[in-house]
Amino acid sequence: MRDTILVTGGTGFIGSHTVVELQNSGYDVVIVDNLSNSKADVVDNIAKITGIKPAFEELDCLDMEGLKSRVFEKYPNIKAIIHFAASKAVGESVEKPLMYYRNNLVSLINLLELMPKYDVKGIVFSSSCTVYGQPDILPVTEDAPVKKAESPYGNTKQINEEIIRDAVASGSPINAILLRYFNPIGSHPTSLIGEMPNGVPMNLIPYLTQTAIGIREQLSVYGDDYNTPDGSCIRDYINVVDLAKAHVVAISRILENKQLEQVEVFNIGTGKGVSVLELINAFEKATGVKLNYKIVGRRAGDIEKVWANPEKANNVLGWKAETSLEDTLKSAWDWQVKLRKEGIQ
Ligand code: WQD
Image (cartoon, rainbow, N blue to C red; front, top):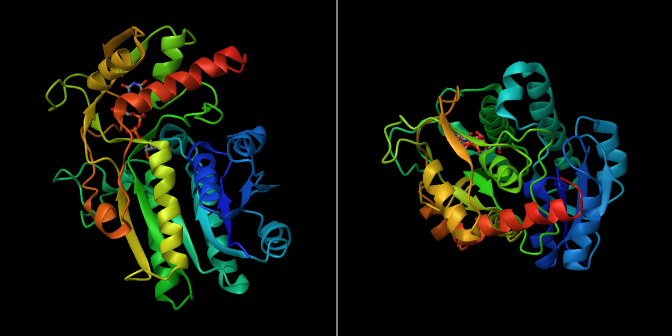
């Protein structure tokens, strides 16, 4: 019987791409999602890509009874979890901290409490480079100090990592792999799934592609007076399919019991820093579309520069980012064009 993987937040941007790669690797998948930031038709689009429709339960991970009856008892073959479900807007977390702490912390606690009761071996947790803040040394490695979070969102990621460590240290018979993502961008090459921000996008790429297609008037570049070669902020932009594949490798590492420690941490990035202005140029080169943008003041809370040292993931996980920035930006543009063609955005 094929192992079943529970993917919370599986109709979301990174979750949906991960479900595709899990199915491509022979796993059965159960998606749990409350659809607060995604749509149910993502399940059908995943099926169009892989030919297999994943099980789907519309459910909030805060609903402990629902998790028991509609997930772990209904799908007794769940062997591991990939936990994406969380609120993730940095700005919103500053306005609604209590909602962020309840949603992002209690949903994880519920899963950790239930795992041993249903013989679930391990959890892959969706963490973020946000935990590093502005690193003192670049590229940043996993042993860089975790700095005081700049937002309640970033703080929930740090606290989540500690909750997992403490649960394991207390003797819970589970393993965990924490994947600290850098900046996930792009869309599936089929353009059947991609990033679907609610309302006005906060993140760079969706705002950029919406500007390029005419939904937004102009892209504002938040600052060109940073201590970087062209003055704009630097990030490590990682293709979402490459990121999804890292989760599949992490899951197999847990199930094949290859972990060196019960809790392992990996930076999932390309290892290459790219500035906002460099990214705009790369987009124009990859798509032939001219972008209307202007330089404005800095955005509060932005760090200046961060990119990964991905050697641990390369060497220990045997995973490496493969897709070029140009191909990734082209996939983001193709997705935006498809949304326009279908009248969705
Ligand atoms: C990237 C760069 C902006 C918008 C956050 C979270 C991280 C993850 C990804 C959830 C920055 C600049 C942006 C715009 C701009 N979130 N920018 N104009 O802030 O690096 O990371 O989102 O998983 O955890 O911290 O991503 O895309 O918002 O910004 O100039 O309209 O683009 O200043 O330098 P960020 P971002």
